[in-house]
Length: 338
Ligand SMILES: [Zn+2]
Image (cartoon, rainbow, N blue to C red; front, side):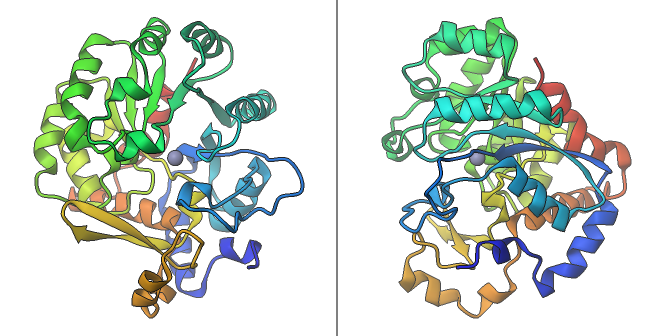
């Protein structure tokens, strides 16, 4: 597979890229991006990845810059940078990101912590080096019906973050529907923490009961949502309508946001990602089901921005510069800081 051709604009995307270059604000902060550098001797694509998060062995900052210069040449671009969600050393990830942020002021570095890190270590890192904290649910927690937020972010860690008034990027163990009760309690208990819920609470396809859960969330002003990998304009519109534009942050989940594909609702409140490229984690018997449509798949990065644009259109705010500025720049700037 020619790695670089993955990130070049395809014919059917050209018009959209031009249109978005004109529509986007001149300064953007991508509120959710992964960036890490691995040791030599590995290919950039991991041929045996079993999950999308393990697709790339490495994705250094220079590569992001290269992809972005092909997409949004008009935009001044910054990013809230998190290390690899794959199985690589958090320590190496953090050193790399922190070092980058000392020479690039357009990188806002996020600490990736592991379960055995002490709350004192996390607190020190947040004071000195990082703008937010991310911890991941284990694969077991993701599939467990009983997994709680405090299994991922233990209470002593949340206390340290609260003391420092930092943000956490929270990938819910399951989704916003099953996690909302605990989330509300934690947001009430730790009022200085900004809870940024990644992937809009893992809701990739619209559900009519979404408004009820959003109405609950509205009551805690320290809960925000990021749009990483969410390309359903109805989901985004519902969040903007209920929470207002001050509580939604544009995020792409790049480099995974550079993949071409779409989410489809498969019923039973589940959705799956269909990828243009048959990566190792794509089941061949499923991939052949959409072989005609896949040619028209766009980069998720474009789809995410388009869904925000469409959502603003639904709300009649498509050309409201202040709102665009909030979603693509100001909210992230205000939340992710030391
Ligand atoms: Zn992510």
